[in-house]
Length: 262
Image 1 (tube, rainbow, N blue to C red):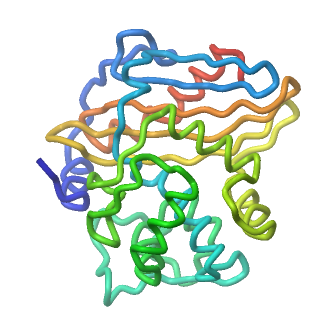
Image 2 (image 1 turned 45 degrees about the vertical axis):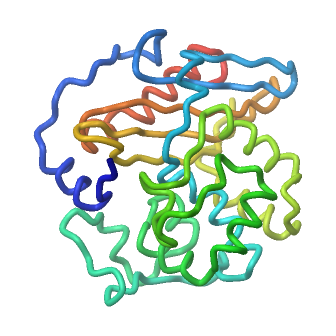
């Protein structure tokens, strides 16, 4: 059964916070979550809850990684221009964050704050055959874009597993996606989230409903530290959007810390 992403998001924000079935630490065996980490230097995989890591889910806003790459490669967007949501095409909703309603949104912020209506407008400047060709070239998930052009990645036809997310990120880092040097460099700057003395973190969140009172939340990316580069993909369940955003990133980072990555 399909659920309308926007309406359920409003519903999720309106609900009071309920207790999520998680410990305060990282993802644990048997919990409704998974973490996959591949460490390049040691050729080592670390996986929590492997059956879930092999299961495909809607990518939600983690699809902004391949989507941004495609849009950059096709010169549909660039890092120097500022953008504004077309409110005639996508009228503002009560649940929209203020970051979506600015008049001068940079590409980096559109990516980091998951400005969905901007990405929907941009994606509609592409056509399905060219998107399909890129996703085949990327070997990204199930490559199924039969859903709506501006939402096939939102609880629709596009699906991807945590293992597939990690392997895609590895190919991206190896510059093995058949893209220009300019696209790789521009995206690297957009993908960067945090730099400390101990590590550099590149990451993207993604969240949305897949069933009644069931949201899936993603946190995917890479960590560069003294040991090398570690690619990771985390996902979990929560009953509401509000529950998810309160715990998703912290739980992923706690798991990475427990695995010796952060």
